[in-house]
Amino acid sequence: MSKMKPVVWPQVVLLGDSITQFAFQANGWGSEIANKLAGKCDVVNRGLSGYNSRWAKILLPRLFPSGGPGNNNNNNIVAVTVFFGANDCALEDKNPRQHVPLPEYSENLKDIVRHLASVGVSADKVILISPPPLHEPAWEKECRLKGSPLNRLNPVTGQYAQACVQAAGQCGAEILDLWTLMQKDGQDYSVYLSDGLHLSDEGNQFVSRHVWRLLESRVATLPFTLPYWGDVDPQNPKSTLLCDP
Image (cartoon, rainbow, N blue to C red; front, top):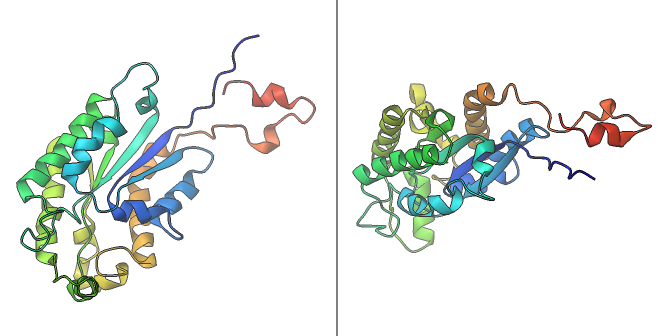
């Protein structure tokens, strides 16, 4: 008896910090994307709360190993979002643990894209996402509750967002500049944030909408991985369910 071929779903991988880790919460931007792709593609959450681009770069070979026996999953990846910066931009004198200097942050992003390319995920499959704007009054309140002073500033976050945009252009990745988009035309961007830093429900909807706009062309031709229920032969379901698409 021949060995049955396993079912392998394509993957969209979400790599980032807490804004990505929380993306699978109720109404999260990642869960919205996963819902749109149900049956066609797995959406894999690799959000790591509190992480910066330095730590992500170190960890990358473990998350996306090079090819070899048992390590060929990278071939199934259709897109990767890379969403760091909200921790990197922490002020060095107030939060040295998470702070990453601006030049290093830029190089880390480019190194992440290069590593992905080296393991079979080309730059055109990568979407870099800039940190969103920081609403200082709300975030300062959160900091004070934890006994610390305000440790991030929106203009500094903007410098990191601009570095993210430049890095994407230099390495051929797609870019989603949340810092600019959320402040476009002087709109009240605080509605997009739950605590001044992390996303509110409205912010999650905003991110989901813009990520989907960039993802849609990459996943538009993906078929359903398994047959539609109405196409299953009820008299002989094996003939439908065990055949290769």
